[in-house]
Image: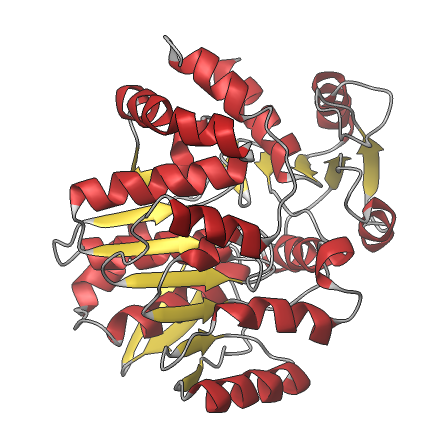
Length: 382
């Protein structure tokens, strides 16, 4: 049992036990956790999950619905993982639920993600919310969030990430992501690869689930024009957010009627930290895999950002070499940050940013969401 939230989170974040999905399912069943949340939208995919979750939440909230979200990783504070109407769970409630679940946590030796999942279930059941938007951690089929019964499945896209767990081909990875498609639960996706789309359609047919493919316009002009239900909008966000917004619009419009003014308000007020987030001449982008870096480069080009220097650091379980190869046309400086998994350079990120600001008109910090989150806290507190 813990007296302070600091003690509790220090303990939780140290728990790195590996367990199969089947064994976690047994624990959920053994202790009778209620996995039947109301109106669950389950979101998987290689990139864009968090943004899509946020767009869905914001669109639902325009109609007065109360929405719970479960996302990872956090940017500043652990509490962000579990939120209601965009507000993270309070320290008081988080500490209360950790202590409430501690006998189970201790007996079953649960991992951090498993603990968070059970806290989320307990918290959302208490509040009796209207909708729940749940982001997968890794994959889908064996992700611990897959114990939850969903009403809609969403797969943003398929790219190379976590191959050591999901497989070495895009189709292997797609098989894991498709694990969130349950019987008679519709699937929405913006995936573009025809082989993967054919596979998704096959799974949906087997599951008697409706398949919805959201097609994305091929636009390279900033601000990005999009059309939805005979209305036109301009998006002043990174180009990859076009996919996420359109996906969210199709998902939510299958549930409720959306008004033009509400959509415009969501677009205007959308904030997603560390996704091409600007602080003067400094841009923070949490791209952490090949597809993410490709999307970042596209955004830099379409924004006509001139004289760009890159401060880069990635984690040891990511393909930093291939990401750097994609960035070969830029002046890149490798930086280090305080994380045991960092595979950056031998210079601190503070010094690297300072040097690059002297050399270039614009500086982009990228390579790892953990790294960029650390830099963001430094920038805000400076």
